[in-house]
Image (cartoon, rainbow, N blue to C red):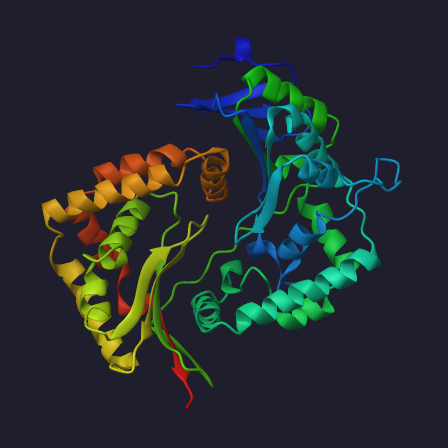
Length: 433
């Protein structure tokens, strides 16, 4: 295990768990996670800003996602002069893979490059952390693109229903609106409001940089120090989003009716933050319900032709989130019948433990899927991104431990605790003929 005597200059060693070590850049509070993956010839750097759509105020939604788009726009050289050739374009020409995503609790930017371009990728990341140029000629067309993206998603029945469920589930917390924002807010968004959001959250102490690949710890941290060491920390404390959602006191229902050939049923239950141990039981429940031809809801809905598809699961969240089940209903059934069937199967989970043999099968498949999802540097950093956003990167390892420890009684207890009518939102998407 790394100790303080081995820590490179400018850094403080925070913790090490298995193959991952966490450091803090003393100058500004930037945290860095390092994991060596030798023999690949490549490195992925993934910068996670601890700001997402949940941090947006009412009437000003969509800012985090819009900034994701804008950070691929021109930057200045530190004196205000525009950099003529964008660094990410140079890396792209050299064969680098890059992208960015925005979600409820975070925004992340990543590069995967040959080892020889690793330091250049970090320089690009450091440049756009505090040197983004805010220009109307870049902002206006990009906002139009985002509005088009909004309209595309709003036109998809399942997306529309999931948005309605979230809005009904969270009356106070920022999880109540979609990451892309509301269309009126996008139309009214200004360059000044975007810059204010950037100047509030895009600082080193509000970010975690993950480095995974074929580079030594000493080389990686030296490159981090060189790229980020001169960036100051924020002149003001980063705002803490500590909104507590008020307790739900009864079932809520939403309905969407459109001219569409599709009929959908969905239900969402409030669940604890994903870094808690109960998330392993919920993942096993999701697998039991809809993962594969042996799953419970596939058997009673898809195989009987009452639904053409059914799915269940929970996105990782820092605060209490949602466990959702949704089904696309066929002409051989109805919303009421599908709801009755799903309620019946959830009642069985509450009343009767999953057989030991079936639970063992579910654990084996879930752990195998987890391992397959970590194949390569990009996949590893993607997994770490969600753990970081959820509040503890060590969940990257401890989740699998919790899956192995979960008992049939644990699953039954979790189902009894959360799968209650008073804790849910029911949604229907109804086809107008």
